[in-house]
Length: 250
Ligand code: NAP
Image 1 (cartoon, rainbow, N blue to C red):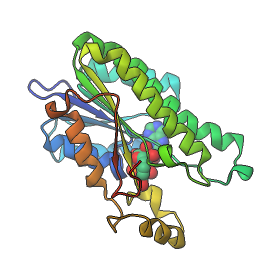
Image 2 (tube, rainbow, N blue to C red; image 1 turned 180 degrees about the vertical axis):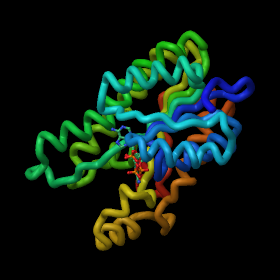
Image 3 (tube, rainbow, N blue to C red; image 1 turned 30 degrees about the vertical axis):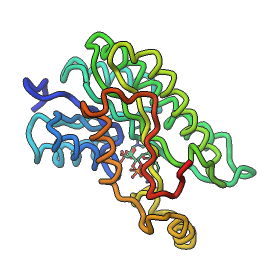
């Protein structure tokens, strides 16, 4: 089933096929939202649809590649006409293409900027316009601790995430008077596919730097999203909420 829920607010979660995005989608369902999640492949859409609809037929999945302007515009226009205007938008989709700077290719630079930064611009460009008319909502952008600290081997990723935080503060200033908040969540090290690929020695070094003495899990981030989406956070905008077990207390 697709369509607008009569009684539930709509939440969009990009990159909901796995990892942090899937946990956010599931948490927002538990919070009472109608959730539309996205995946980049048809196979991912089918699996995500099945997962989300275990919680009710009103939830849905769409195929979305935020690195593609035309597809993003068309898919989100379809979202609005089929499901209505989202009350919560979680820009979670992101990639890494790590390499030491001297070996970092322009392709890997562009890929990360195009997805992690310009991709969020594309989503906000379409949805802010319709959210403004409703004069309500929350935009939550998933940044990273690396946007604050930087990290050897991640110049592209650090630049994109730092840029995302500056973008979010600027958009927050422009639309605060319309009752729309824009905030970032900056996770530390969270156990997902993205971090599973790191060498064991690097993981051990990171663990040693976390005062909380454990890696984060996806629910640590989903809980922070649920808070920033809630009415308890209506007066919080333009902020970055760090969820990292104390690995950076900047
Ligand atoms: P993940 O397990 O690698 O999942 C990434 C998600 O993004 C997938 O759903 C993927 O879809 C989607 N995606 C990738 N490229 C996309 C594109 N061009 N358009 C739309 N969707 C796309 O990553 P994760 O660890 O859950 O990370 C989620 C977010 O948290 C990212 O923004 C990441 O930078 C941030 N973060 C993660 C950590 C961490 O420690 N894991 C730390 C700080 C910040 P498919 O499944 O279809 O490929």
